[in-house]
Amino acid sequence: MNILLLRPNPGSEKFGLGPFFRVEPLGLEYVAAALLAQGHSVTIADLRFRPGASAWVRRTRPRIVGISCLHALEYDRVVETAREVRRAAPDVFILVGGHAAMAFNGPLEDDSIDAISMDDGEEVVPALVAALDKGTPLIEAPALRLRTPDGWISTPALPARTSLDLVPLPARDLVARHRSGYHCLLFKPVWLIETARGCPFRCSFCSVWQLYDRSYRERSIAAVVEDFATTGDAIFVADDLFWNNPPRSLELAEALKKRGVFKRWILVQSRTDLISRQEKLLEAWRPLAKDFDIFLGFEFASDKGLSGITKDSGVKESLEAVRVARSHRYGINGNFLIDPDWDEDDFHELWDFVAAHGLQRSGFTLLTPLPGTESFRDIGHRTEGHPWSDFDMHHLLWEPKLGAERFCELYAETWRRSILNTSGEKKLVDWLRQVRPLQIPYMIKVLRSTQAMMQPETYLREYAASRSAKTRTPPCGGRPT
Image (tube, rainbow, N blue to C red; front, side):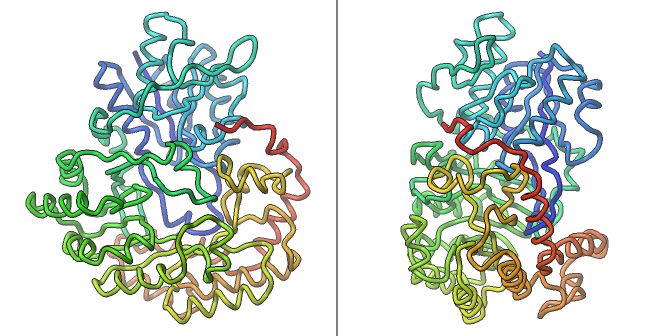
């Protein structure tokens, strides 16, 4: 069967670190690999590049079109893409899947969409394709929300969590045309790798652990080594919790060294309390890349702030993680949450903390209740009236305690204290010295776009526009999983 898989264009990247990150559609590559193994013909089209969805439909003439939905801010764009596909091919079967679709599918229950995948696509999509191919009732295909004449219904869940080793390695060759456009921070092109899936923790602002019932699955050492060996020189490991299993992580580091796999740059994501206890593990991994960065969620600068988000770790662990990582020459990229209910003293506490511990490479995102999280269930009603595109963690979704004008002044000042401020400690010329000459135009474009974060008027303008355009139904209208 002929199948087209689409990565939609999420829209404008106005704020935050969005301009610094454009990574390959790894989930679609995994789905494609599973479909190719069954003998189907598959095309992946990344709509963040030209041409658009209708052009790809005309070019490939698919029987099925799958559209990924990774983040809440993409809900409306995914529906728009589905409608464009429907206009171009009225009889095509349209399926939507991905993290945001699984976490909170209500906004996607649109007449332009035939089904929504409610579990990992590598298993759900081949089963759906087989049912369509054989003409069997789709109600028998697992883990779907199906549009029927009588409304949307759910099919039975998958019987068990599939071993990741039963999933073929991603079909990366299907995005080769776009490879040069995938980048992270200073590095381009970048490859995305997954070694494990899930998380056993329970942070209130995260939906990963709820999707997978706090389970954690790992791919075999041999498969991960092969994935590392066959990808490029700059790697972003997509695991939500890298190094979660220390013995396995040590074994993986040694296996990569034995295979002779060494990279120019690696970026991983992990928890501060894990890193603070695993100095030998970080020592073992450090030789595997010339530059090795760790992304850490600091969230808040005090234990009082952390107590409100079910983080299960404190500031002491954060500072020890930074010490351990820096002692082995790791770069620290972190993130702090900015609460719209803050007083001015809370901003000053954060500024002092960042300055005292040299955390200027951090990002600063607004506390945003994302659909599918405990936070959304508790305070999602405060976001009523905002379009989903505002859920980028840089738009104000309700009136802040200090008032919008003063809050935005302090928020912009927070960003001005980061290294992204080219009028601050790290000038534009300092950034450009870190990249190859051919990448200078890319860096200039990215840095220019991020300077909007330093201007309070940017946030105020967006907030005013959102308040004047009540485009979204209340959050309770969606159906959480």
